Length: 171
Image (cartoon, rainbow, N blue to C red; front, side, top):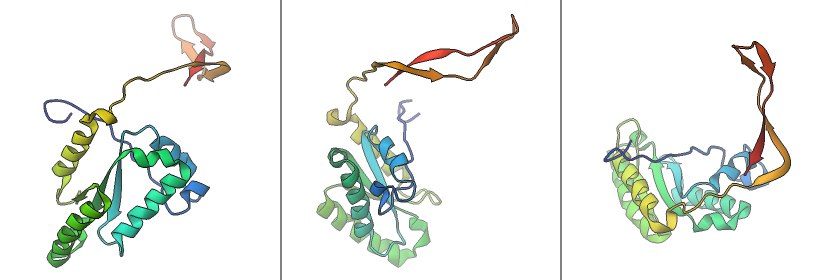
């Protein structure tokens, strides 16, 4: 739960690398799941040679897969900030402000090890999720004739019969 016992669900979508939109790496298996998310959180490590370039590669892959994904709210987290020294962290702080202005998105320094930025990140995600344009208004399910979802055989302990249940598949 989060603040006043509210909650939100996050999905970790690994495998988005250069070429993912063409099926490279885990590719399309994970890109499909991104369409369901209201807010996209990008994580680029602090040790990256060019954080902006890596972020833009990820955006490019999303655009190639589905240009509509670029209309979703985005946040960039610069992760693993515990791996850089104090001077490096100071540079990242300066870079963060410049990236926010240039990219037009919230950029947060993050370290799961030290806890740096974790609360700020959760607050930023919560704030984005509360915006009207990011709300899920209606979920529609429709039956697809002829398609069934098969479940594993179930043993009814009272009658000791084994049966397979067929359910209609909805999308």
